Image (cartoon, rainbow, N blue to C red):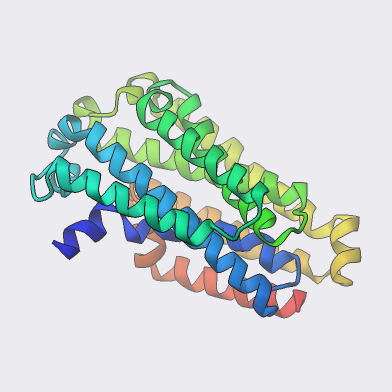
Length: 286
């Protein structure tokens, strides 16, 4: 039962909420205990909020999940967790969310509420509308970054927000490409009928280029150089380039991409690249 509940709330997908740490790292407060604690609290607030949405999504999509080759093994679709227990899990997540976010700033509560509303709207409506499904996913990641900034009351660079926007769009587009290739005519996601491989590849090329350009511009912007008192951050762009190219390789050549979290945790070169990027940024910034 515990294993099924952990799968239901998708603990492994909590890694996506790591975007709340972006303002902490780039505001030079990573080693400040108070700021770090506030960000940890904000991280778990987003984790519980995202889990609420995941459970609602699984309840809503139970029939289509049962027709999917992989999703049919999900706890609700497989019948291992009943609707009654699923609603109990939602209630538990709401209680935990209220408990951890109680002392966070009012602006953070506004962002968190917007995140939940957006994702509930995505579950019932937006994921069925071509392009809006991708934009909705990207907006969710941007709200994570803004939530992290509001939690510790710091400003975040607009270039970093744009980078987040294009990174999340890129990942969403790659996910759609993988779904089209793996499911074909048996696709259970309605919106896939509105996409084609050619169209998806055009969007992925644009978003991939935008990620690299926006991050590079952030690293050399006058505000960044003045804030960190160094021009060396530009050298971390190479890790961003490799990460994008590696992800394209995994999707196009290895037929992966449906599960972003799985790629992050299972692909050794991607993991090494992330560790090297993080270590280099921390060394340069701090």
